[in-house]
Amino acid sequence: MVYSWFLYPLATLGLEQLLRVGQLAVRERCVQLGKAQDDFHAELSALVSAKILSTEDENRWLALGRLCDGRDFLAGVTLLDPGQAIGTLRLITDRINGLF
Image (tube, rainbow, N blue to C red; front, top):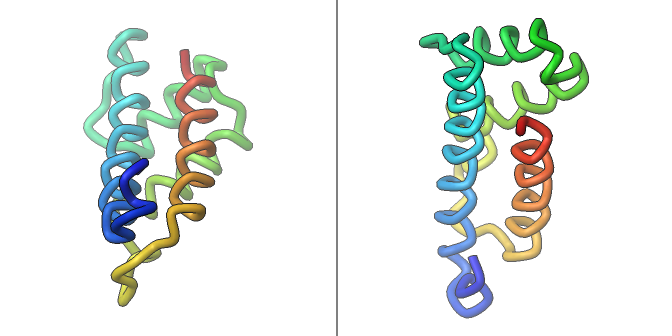
């Protein structure tokens, strides 16, 4: 993402990968708790029931999951501004840190 200041398509690529990292963090936390599921939504529900996540956090994760699954935010978009990508990086980093 640092190099995206020189080549904007790298911001989009970095953000796509970052969303996948977020989903993997949710899965890993569920594995640690012995509550692994085959579905991202079910894993979030398991983390809420284990009081790892609040329902507010669950909604945030669901929104991030929709971005990764459908890539709706990238429909027709070829470039994201590095500033946009960095804002999302901070958001996902905070969410991941909240899991552990």
